[in-house]
Length: 224
Image (cartoon, rainbow, N blue to C red; front, side, top):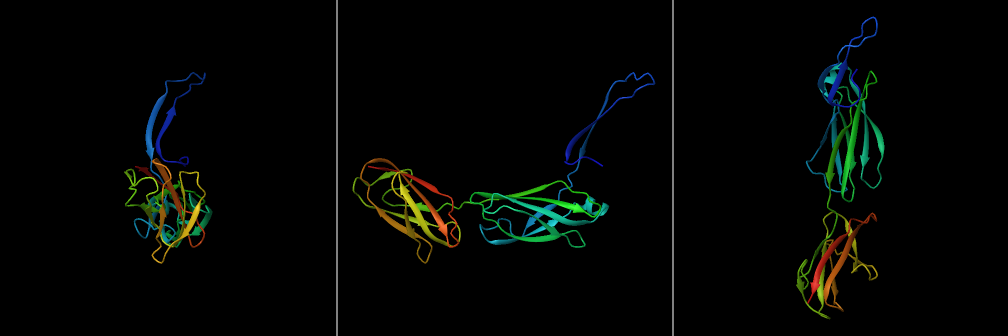
């Protein structure tokens, strides 16, 4: 039985005579193939918060030696990380439906358990999300300059994920936060007039219908 894990392994051997005199040491390097299962989402890039079916398939060699009977699934980076077991079908495969909701990314760790009790290596699968809102302004372009003191500018917020109902923003990380509702198209616009010239920062995050606050976005610009 190889130890848990895969990759390069080394076996060191020496012989002993009756007086316990040791010989030189022989070294034998070899690689152990991973026994981790395969994790396959139904779509190449699952959408944030949308239920997605994942298919779990056992390592063929492991399945031939002793059929896989279950999987241990662990989520990492989501709003409610958890570990749970999934029963395998007679062919060793299993399916699980997950709604991934990590603000920046989320990972799955999956290992299989065979009928003989063997627990496989852990397989990893991960994806990243951009849940920040889009921000745009004609008068005050991002990373550019425009407008002037007391010159009003319109800033438009657009969602990158579904079901956004409001946006919360603050200027220069010192002003009080303000929340505005999103329209039927899930966008919102605000008007703002700067009191000073120079560099400014607008920080915005969106909130979904379920109350989840998404990742913030910093929009930098300069007032003429």
